[in-house]
Image (cartoon, rainbow, N blue to C red; front, side):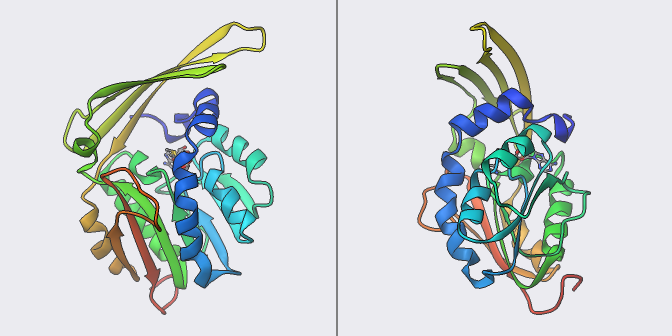
Length: 248
Ligand SMILES: C[S@@+](CC[C@H](N)C(=O)[O-])C[C@H]1O[C@@H](n2cnc3c(N)ncnc32)[C@H](O)[C@@H]1O
């Protein structure tokens, strides 16, 4: 199992930022609409990556604490999402989540946790960090994701100064693995190589609302934050904290 801080080292973090912003871009309008009731409050983003969604939150006038496990992603987020209240390392599921009026997360960040139990602990921690009437809006890959995405497969992206080859597999029903080989052009025109393996744990997302309800958040599973089209098998969990306080 990878150390969470070793996912998205410098080269892959940059490739993600340059080539894979479409998901956060697609999710942003729906998330911003969900956040209107807590305008003026504090938004905490989990797994913010390079700050692609963070920037939309900041531009819309929200106070944001953006967090991620990857130091390289956080470096990019500091450049990209200028104006965030704070951009800092927070490694799920054990690092404490600040008390917030909204918890948001896109790009299936919680599926990176090593076990379904660790995902549950992160969900509980997020639910308990919400203030009364706080908004919960995250996406998560369901067990159906692999079949819907026709894994296994190989995909290649070739750009002027980077390229990426991804081999996707599903060794068991609840694991989704991406083995990535990437090449990045150096300033002198030579190329360097890096490799990362991402192990994602898939869960039955229908179990999430009852779990959150035990911790004060009423939530539903859906297929979008707003009017965007998300990949089949990637589900949204959208909810609201009941009126009692964060520890309820
Ligand atoms: C697919 S990326 C999505 C990034 C960003 N939200 C986006 O949509 O562009 C998943 C993110 O989860 C982060 N991550 C992985 N394991 C984590 C953990 N244990 N705690 C916090 N973040 C984690 C990664 O560093 C990465 O930035």
